[in-house]
Amino acid sequence: MDSLSGIAFFVQAAEARSFSQAGRVLGVSSSAVGKSVARLEQRLGVRLLHRSTRSITLTAEGSLFLERCRRILCEVEAAELELSETQRAPQGKLRVSMPLVGSLVMPALTAFMHRYPAIELDVDFSDRMVDVIEEGFDAVIRTGELTDSRLMSRTLGTFKLLLVASPKYLTARGTPLEPADLADHACMQHRFPSTGKFEPWPLRRQQDAVEPVLGASMVCNTTEALLHVARDGLGIACLQDFMVRDALAAGELVTVLDDFIQHQGAFRMLWPSSKHRAPKLRVFIDFMVAELFKAGNPLQIK
Image (cartoon, rainbow, N blue to C red; front, side, top):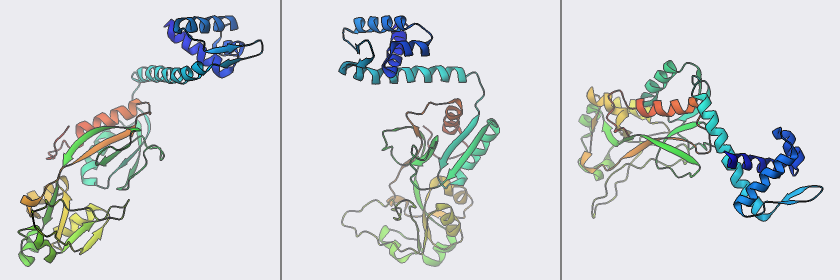
């Protein structure tokens, strides 16, 4: 603990550029600050501060050491705060962003609100790629791989994309037997809001086979709408397995071209790595990991 005290005295003195001012902030004498810094320098075997009768300045080594010491003190402060907050019930405002798949997230979200009524949720439902840090989100749920080194993540579950259509549609238009047959069908496309591009259908490439040209009888930026249109017999849609589970079980939809589909995606919880994990954030992450795919969902939980 003496080392940590020396670090705190050094940081305060370096920032104030004065032993006496640092002492006033710390509630000790200027002599005590000076002696603590001197002991730290002796232990390290390097001079951290230049002293003069009027002021003190950092040496080159002191400047490098100061940045490290600031991070150390921040971590200690965060650890103390985290321990003290464990004694209190999670509360406060939590700003999160979730994809437009209400059938997946709403049961878990409402269960979380019942469990933690003191946490005020500010939820942004959107399929766009949000900037977690710049837009001030505490956490977001998204698909895909983590590419931002500023973020931490936990995998919530995996899913597959399926091609589905209603029996009524297939009776009228026929069942495609291979990907090339899709050129003669009403294909409903999902457009990514962030890029404006169509979501590619996960059709495994066949050797020497011609890439199928997919029409677009409907284009939509939310998959929820495509589910309704597919159930009404208006075409073939590419949707996540958890979205169509109930419709498949009820016989409202059937899958097509299963042997030609190759896909696995993942939902992840992301949050800023530099953000102190307050109790409200910690319980939200743990709850979603445990509950999001719990209710009979075929996704694999990790």
